[in-house]
Amino acid sequence: MTVIKRETDYAVRMLARLVGAEELLSVTLLAELEEVPPVFARKILQRLQRAGIVESARGPFGGYGLRRPAGEVSLLQVIEAVQGPIVMNECFSAPGVCRRARGCPLREHLGRVQGELEARLDSVSLREIAQAIGAAVRSGRGARSKDRVGPRISVSSRASRERGAGARTARVRLGRAKR
Image (cartoon, rainbow, N blue to C red; front, side, top):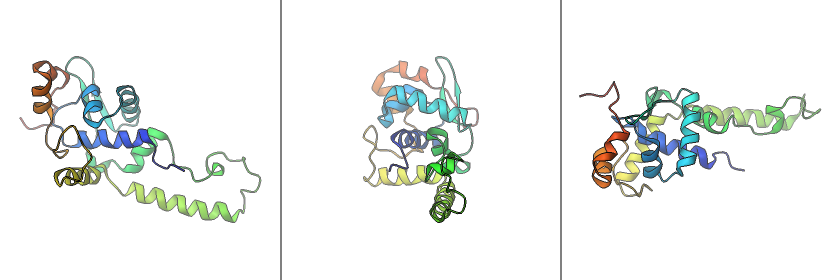
């Protein structure tokens, strides 16, 4: 049983990248930096946008940024935005699927486990995850192969040097960034 699906893993990595970004980052750049297939990156970011976790701007200077502070976005919110609610058993999501649901001791125990899991996932913020990823990368334990900097350090200038001046057209400064 997989609780966290691959798409959710991709989403968390892309969101962690956005935590420290001072600019909007294009789907192409996020996909490349986090080694996510571009088609999945687009679909995932659209789901996160519908959930109000990220915002986007269209056009040559467009891209994605966090809509809310990273400390206000929980891991549970990301999971539910990308893959839907976590369900321990079908009887929790489809009432009437089991005629034994009322008074079922297994359902009662699984319900408590599900509640504990949801509470724990809801207590972990995107900021905490981004900080943990940054610390792992800086210590050499991180899995980011495209760069060796934490998520709070902008990758735009490095990416621009690697791709040439045209790479800057895919990003624009966020309004809340210090100038």
